[in-house]
Length: 297
Image (cartoon, rainbow, N blue to C red; front, side, top):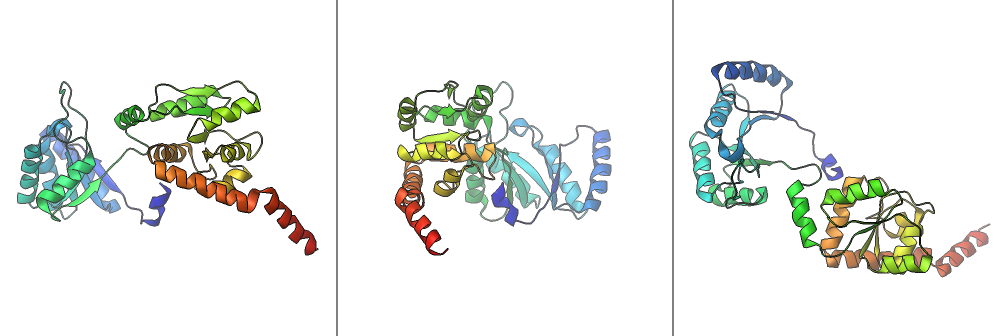
């Protein structure tokens, strides 16, 4: 979310389409009051499988008629390309040029997911079908979608080991990614055995604050691995793009996922860390720094 700080803050209000005339009247009173807060737009949900499409459009058109921007949701899960094309043509024919494109939830009892799996496929289809007619809003989980976690975990064959003596927290965080087999070391081991364990892995995911600042990152450097997390001196110096300083668990999990699936990026991070270590953390570098310090006294 840090990347979004450069964008101006905006807000919108989302409604679900009423089922009764009484509900519509109540909603009308509500959006008129909220309009005084000058949101960027209003939106109206679509219902699983497009089950509320007509009521969604009716709600949006009424809000637009009062001079406010309003966008209907359009979800693709369980839908065919023909279904989505028909909905787009309906919206376009009624002058709607603003939509919220979503993956949506699979309707209860429906086994097939339709011709779209993710919202990015829906967005691409909207552009392919209608060009730049629609202004498209998208939405996402703040961390990652539960189904994506499962699919991600199925695609990773390497084990993930968390060197964290608080098994409960470590296991919980890694399980949130979707891994079924979680290896969390609870007991201390000899240093040689520990380094052997480190060397088996592409990344070291440090979830806690190291008892000896920088030790875990130093071990990762010895094994040509990548340290993710931790805020010791060596983590901050050698692994500035993956250390835990000013990064929350969700961002560290995202970094870990990316490095596990992108071998080139992971290798580049490891090589850059080794280069930094030789320049700033080696015995020679330390000796030269001390020599300059005493020479300037």
